[in-house]
Image 1 (cartoon, one colour):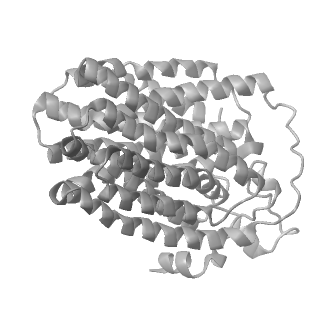
Image 2 (cartoon, rainbow, N blue to C red; image 1 turned 90 degrees about the horizontal axis):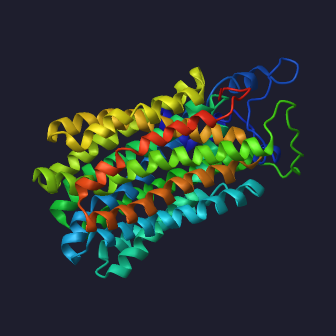
Image 3 (cartoon, one colour; image 1 turned 30 degrees about the horizontal axis):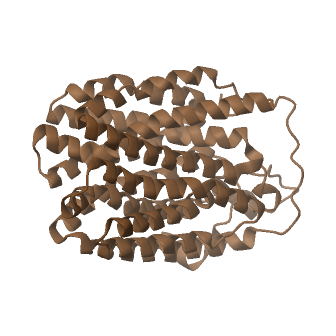
Length: 434
């Protein structure tokens, strides 16, 4: 009860990091606290993460991604109701994810220059209206517009919420990013389960019921905005002084390119399961739509587990090691999946989900440390690339499935984690990304 009281009633008790103009364009770190410079109470607040704020932003991420995952979960209903082919299904994913991909770096660049504490609540409003529109859409064009609105809400949500998670980290950046990612992964896993229990029995109009989740998220994000706003000062941003051992511009460019490629291999594979795993199970094993959604939930829940543990492991052992393990470690299981039986497939997807999703936090924090003076933009780029690759990949895979088979798609995608070999080109960092 006290946690909710703190979150909704008194954010003043949870301000471990003070945000200034400098921190909006430079690495956000916990200040060096000494008795001579701060009071004991401030020292205590700076000693660790602001757990209430992290819990609030993670729960908001949970609500946000729960609503987003409903789109893919209701694909079988939309396919049957409107006689859509796999290409059209892929275009719905593209409409949703391309909107998010296009706008996230723009939002991040803008908030680097001027923080917008209430943008999260406003962005969630787009998701609210997108869900309502999707529940009453009876034309394919309207479905695409509704999906685009949900994508727009995601574009506004992710860059600034990732910044808030880092500000509340108390210096444990990987841990904070994992807590943040855990909310999103858990929300993504809930979509198929809720669709099986609610949308399948009650039909497309029941999607409107989930707009109440969007309203709850708006309230929480507004309160988080109230916590965030007093910490922002209007001092002019200071110039960024690079460390003598800092990477060159060429090294940074190569490293970012490699990270994008690694994210490509991870996200495209996850997208292939998220968008088409239901159809794969129905086509190959003849299971019902509801049963297939439960199997998809198992995979997505495994993603949530991996996303949580990946960040702390990166803080402890180094992000490069976690990236190596999480991408290449999934390869044996992805290669076996197209040839496994129904129950063996469920077991394999658990291993795939836990291993491959543990890299997300490490990739994002690694990128943030490479370009610390453009934190919002780089977060937006990488979240945007993740969404964009997922959307474009879903459309391409849908086209491929129409011309071959859904089983052939999974045989091809099984080799995607091999791209993880590119991690050899990642530089050694002087910080925790070693």
